[in-house]
Length: 421
Image (cartoon, rainbow, N blue to C red; front, side):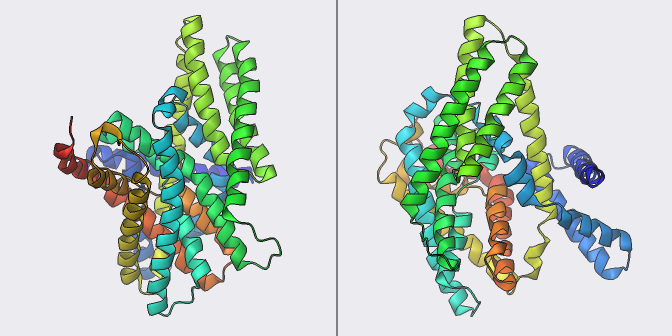
């Protein structure tokens, strides 16, 4: 087992190094976007070569990549550390300034987006006579509605967005995961034979408040231990223990481990800043460790996303469905952001509503979390329906990450002149 794991790791690291060099010497795209794009191109090339050759090496490579479970890697592996690393750069006092807007966006954009996406998607698949029911389409809406915290914290900060707006986008993505999971569980219960139908608010209450309680309690207890030592490597170990144990406890009790990880990150980020000021210590090792770990795990994830993109090619009406998914995604995202904006004034950085909607719509990237939820749906869906769901999820991820990610600076520059300074 260890040998297989090491083989997978070496293969992915080889892609990270080689593709990173290619990007550095050619297009110089943002690293995460470049890794996903180039890995996808490599996958296409290998598929073409495989179709023209009986080379068993390519068969072995494809079998190896299919054996790497993104669901296990992310949801049952490194997600908690990636969310902690992304959120530990945020501070409680910053959240207080934008709490109303972040809360509204996390709840309303995910709820409204899932419903709009689900109903529009159902109308399309009904016309195309695809075998998806309305609950299946709503389940799909809950999968792709939440923006991805990993994409938001690793990619968006590189585009020079105004500080408060960038913080709001990252804050929304960090907290809307719990809402998305609650919707997913609610719609999932419609598709399985269960006497215990779980309502959205019931699931949401358990996911959110249970996770918040666990995250706060674990963080406060272990940060007391953090304060008792000056050994930075022991402090790093304590922070790892805090987020991993909070995530596992939440998984056991059915809470949102992702939200607990975010709360741990914000708490440790705030408290370590106070600790450093009080004791006049720079905490270099601690901060560098989490920055390096975050960077490496992000790069591994984006290579895996790019290499595992090929199921899209097996979907019926692949080109038509790609256009449909992209258009519906933009409609659902912009409409759901507009709903949230109705309750929140003034908007950050003096944005007007149309410009703010445009920024959040184009900055609403999807990533590994959406794909992990889509993969989990294989347990309750037929193989034909599952292939449609997983392929459409890939389409949304690819478009929002590659196309929207690369054009985000252009969109912002077009909007920026209308923003009152």
